[in-house]
Amino acid sequence: MDEILTQNPINTFSTINVEELLMKLSDTVLTFGGKILLAISVYLIGRWIVKRINKIVGKLMKKRNIEPSLFSFVKSLVSISLNLILIIVIIGILGIETSSFIALFASAGIAIGMALSGTLQNFAGGVMILLFKPYKVGDFIEAQGKMGTVKEIQIFNTILTTSDNKIIFVPNGSLSTGIMTNFSKSGTRRVEWSLTISGENYDKTKEIIISLFKEDDRIKTEPPCFIAINSISGSSVNIIVYAYVNENDFSDVFHNINELFYKTFDKEGISCK
Image (cartoon, rainbow, N blue to C red; front, top):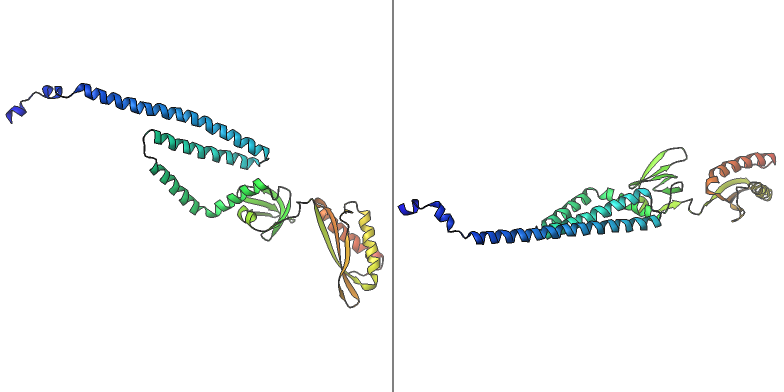
């Protein structure tokens, strides 16, 4: 025991193989340094690839005339996703376990998806609308029991302006999956009138309507107007009248012709109900 206590620490240290220690240290430095160099190389090459993919995606979206809001969002989403993959690859090259990072990202994605399920549905609907364009700004549409002119198409909502100047926000999720009527898609709209007159005045009324339509340049000759008896009640008949106009003229033609019907029928002695 006394011999051990009185042993010189320097002599003990000298028994360690210094050369072996230096060899192990140099191997470790070379191995880790090689990984760092490889990681840097992969990062630089990966960044170049990400930029090239972003440019390709940008060119494809420009060719399809994608809305600016969706254009910038998709480019950012692609860039973030690719850079995230690149980071995971670099972490793996450095020898760090990546399964925990992947599990963490997957768990976070599931949690966010469950919390924002409705919002994500509206976002997906907005992307579909901006890509396939079932309607555009300025179109007159009817959906979800609401009718109005499209003022703005956002990522999550479509904004409509009604005829009485109300602003309606309609979620894009319901617009992309539900029934939607676009009155402006074909460029023309059918104006409809329903008139109740005395049966004996039907032929005269029909001639007056055709004459009024011929004098109005806003009413199209093709397709031609349509006038017919819809129902009969005693001595009275209900007639329906259809005419086609440009979408922008719909409201003006409807009200102007209503006024002409009233004044002309009264002048010609035709009682209209």
